[in-house]
Amino acid sequence: MSEATDPTRRAGVNGVGRVLVVIPTYNEADNVSDIVGRVRQETPAVEILVADDNSPDGTGVIADALAATDPRVHVLHRKGKEGLGAAYLAGFEWARERGYDAVVEMDADGSHAPEDLPALLAAARDADVVIGSRWTRGARVVNWPLRRLALSRCGNLYARLALGMPVSDATGGYRVYRRGALDAMDLSSVCSQGYSFQVELSRLAHRAGMRIVEVPITFAEREHGSSKMNALIVAEALWRITSWAVQDRGRAWRRGTGRAS
Ligand SMILES: Nc1nc2c(ncn2[C@@H]2O[C@H](COP(=O)(O)OP(=O)(O)OP(=O)(O)O)[C@@H](O)[C@H]2O)c(=O)[nH]1
Ligand SMILES: [Mg+2]
Image (cartoon, rainbow, N blue to C red; front, side, top):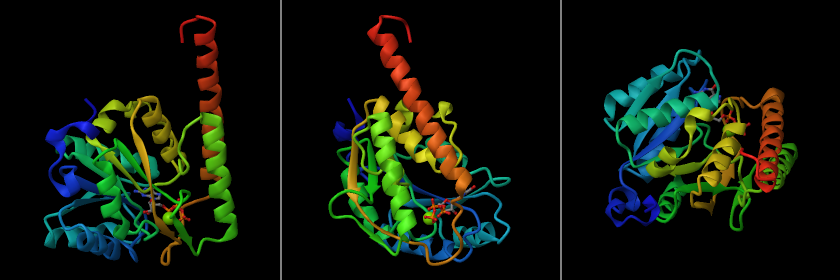
């Protein structure tokens, strides 16, 4: 039975059990206190893990101070900048070791509004994976420059067509994963470092037969600090999506001709 339909799991935060919000940070000193405070305010029962890659601007020190006064805030200090994907995988492992029932992915820069979290958690009652979507009816994208809008729209269109996934925001990074989904997906195979991580996990969830639900969110451009997005990250996403599409087609062809995959 999928966790989404298992009645014994319908307890805890919004009916999904113990929830850990993982917030990866690199140079987010101007944002980390605000985002942690907003999450605590909106969803007091969840716990938070700040996964910091030894930010030179002292984000980790600020996170430690928050954790010192709030037992629901934790900090994972990593030795150096290894990319968003590696920070999330370490956060997922931290959550699994401690028996959390659901893990939330959330950026530190305020683009993912904690005010939308209750709706995402409510949707997780009947889903294995919830994606806070910028591109479903009812969603809003605030203050994003045209080139970022175009990049996100085109990237998502390409991912959907190339990989055949029924997901409108496969690159979105505001998500809930139920424990069963993390167990069902082969996380040891994940190779993305940058923002193709979100597409890779969407693909793994889809291939593992997980029930993926999208919930409209209000996504806002960051107000403080600087983006870590760069041309290399975009190139990695393009290259990886193309190579997954080739692999998937090769696998389908081998199945069609009766050869082992
Ligand atoms: N731990 C860790 N966190 C990272 C790393 N790179 C980015 N992050 C965090 O991941 C989140 C998303 O990064 P952003 O720079 O906002 O990237 P983005 O949201 O794709 O791009 P923008 O829309 O331009 O903000 C933020 O909380 C970052 O601090 C990294 O190498 N390590
Ligand atoms: Mg951002």
